Amino acid sequence: MKSKHLEIYADGAGIMVGSTVSKLNFYSVVDISEDNDEKQIEELKVQIAIPTITLLKVCAKFLKQIKTDEQEIISIIDSNKEEIIKTLASLSLQDSDGE
Image (tube, rainbow, N blue to C red; front, side, top):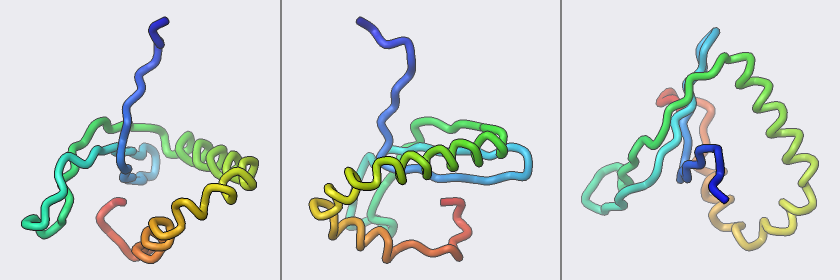
């Protein structure tokens, strides 16, 4: 049976938050090259414009779902521990590139 919704796989996402409308960018990694200074080439798969208030509601639902699934999430953390630590270490609230 064919699904009636669009499903797009994305390796990552970026966000631009505006006062009334925000944009979510979902991308796939198309190349990882040591010759490239960024080391990774991304291809934008889809950009979604969404009212900022709706984005806030979606984020709240997302966080609530994470709390609901907390034990299951904790049980799989060990298998991804190194990547999680690396990702958390790379985070900065000072970034201005929209991600």
